[in-house]
Amino acid sequence: MADMIYKPVATSAAEEGVKDLRAKMLAKKFWIITTKPVAPPEEVGKYLREHLESQIRLEKSGVLFAAGPVRDPQGNVEYGMFILRCKTEDEARAIADADPMHKAGVRKYELHTWSMNEGRVNITIDASDSTYNFA
Image (tube, rainbow, N blue to C red; front, side):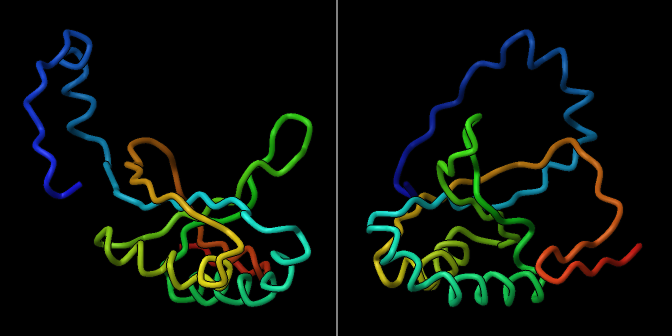
């Protein structure tokens, strides 16, 4: 993608009308990894503990913003997702590549960027051990 040439796009009237609002937005960049199994459940399960331990290490180091399964309306897991705080795509990709399930080839991932524009965060919560900290 680095060699793609992006052409300027004309700004729509709607975009022009919200420039003042967008100028104030956080626009914090995160990396989203979506991951799906490509092996039978029993094969994927062999790496679950190692995967979760890896996620907890990322959480404790401050890199992991959030993670967990994404479910359809019937409650079936569609894919896994984790959101990373990284400076570069290379850093995010290295973390995704190092995930035990991806290294073993039992899950494949896609990497996406996400801009957090709106929302509120008030406390730090480490979901894996139910600890929290008021800031």
